Picture 1 (spheres, rainbow, N blue to C red):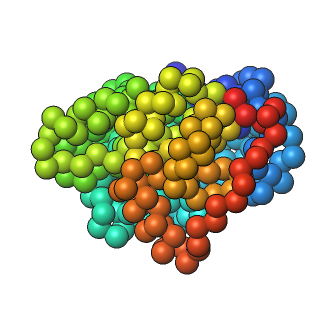
Picture 2 (cartoon, rainbow, N blue to C red):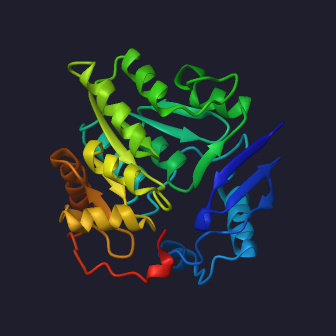
Picture 3 (spheres, rainbow, N blue to C red):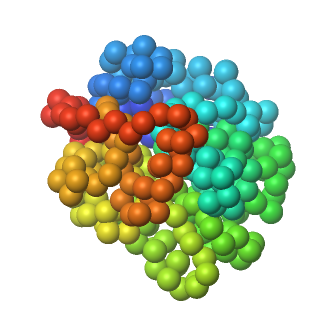
Amino acid sequence: MDEHVMEALGRARVVIRDGKVVEVGEPELKYCPIFDKFRGIKELTKEEIRKNMQFRIDDFGMCKADRKLRMRDYLSFGVSEMISTAMANGMMDAAVIVCEGCGTVVLDEPDMVQGIGGRVSGLVSTTPIPELIQRIGKDRVLEPETAKIDQIEGAKKAIAMGYKNIAVSVAKGSQAKKIKELEKANPGVNLYTFVVHTSGMSEDEAVEVFNYADIATGCASKHIRGIGHGKQVYYVGDSVPIFGITARGRQIIEARLRATGKKAEHKPDAPQPDKLL
């Protein structure tokens, strides 16, 4: 079966089969400033979500064998943009991210990191797309037979491949803790942890994010934003803050600032309560 499940706009569950959106769940959020800015979507309805996801399939081939693997930057401060910039600058030599049709992958080309991660929503599960695995490189896919998603095992694979400065994207604070433990167990290896897709995250998970991660996206998370602003953690972004939790996290953000020629803007972050989870 060709099936790819995502938590997409507003944390709605979306199922894609054979290049078509076949199921859209009820969104938990009704508004996203990023999709308002870039796609003019004022309210996240099931129909708007379906249209946007199908647009991505038709536009760059998301969930298809011929999907584009290299793309230009999409956001000023998206996680894929920050990782690709850090790789281009020599701060990192590999990234452990997730790709539909492949699962967890280990990449060392900045433009491929951007192309794969820049326009795909939170991937929950996926099935193998053999042509896509072949194009990325079977040796770079954690488990080609199943397209397994496991970022901890992906980080172990990157270390085994000889990389020393590795970006790892995760979606939970507990995963950030495991990545930090893995880093301590491998002297000479630096694992830079990026926590993404944080809307709806529990307070306990958010606490672990700030204890163990380098960078976290604020998304629509009341706990990530609350802790980040409460601790006065360095951040960029207004409607969707990106927190540089550690000194090296801040360095990554500052590298992106230099690359874009932008200045850090710390504006009051006061979204409406009904827009946070």
